[in-house]
Length: 345
Image (tube, rainbow, N blue to C red; front, side):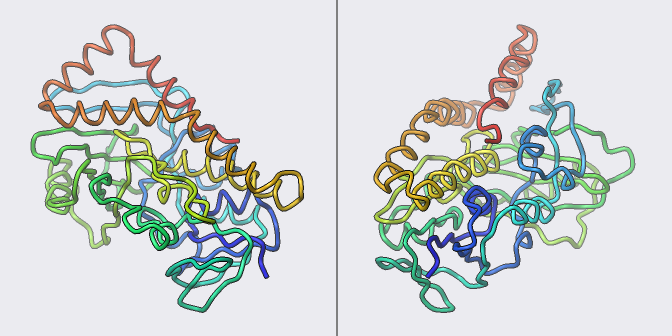
């Protein structure tokens, strides 16, 4: 019997497996590891180094460029961000874990076992890293994953047009849903997407308009995306430990979920390893895990308030505020404060 069953082979689940570093753990996912990308895959370069995934880097960006209703604001990025290859990053995490992978859909949880389409998997501890719908936690607590506290994103990766500039480009415009759009260079490709704070209606048309605006033909590439929770959820439901998007550990306003997933996945994996090695009780694990999340709750609250504000004012107001912030020299300080959170452990 495996000691731990981890549901979800994305950033959070793999971070748990990497930190756990045990052979007596099982990871459940219906797709091959690294095969089901849902993210723009951009994160601070120091985080990439911290997780030993340097070979996944496709491009390093030393600037953020905000296009807000006609205003263009440049912000130097120190440390820089990197766009990474999702498959290569996941494989780098997987290579440092000892888990056995079971290709199956998880469908629920019963005491001491995870229920899957390939049968039951008995275990001492279960981790729900299944993404926004939180399969295990939702099975135990109906209504756990509340739709109104989730946004939605849609992205396509297209061949890079000649002359497309470096930098992470963000767009806020009246023609776009309340939220933002982006275009990130990734080597020979560009990742173009749109994110809406509430609901996902009109995303495909908004994406098409953005591609036309950028002069990028809509390639045959299939768009990918999904729901993005932006409010923290209970990280412990019954005997299930919840992490990553499943626990709502996505930064509001920016919808950045990779860093929190890697951070909290590592925290949880290390705590589980201490429990399995007899150096910590399960009750102490729960207390420590909750405390770690509570310690950074203020960041989620602050960004959530900013998201509500930006979503309630016209884009031209956001543009003027960005320009004012740059004039007052606030951009550099705010950027460093933002990036310093959730660094690799």
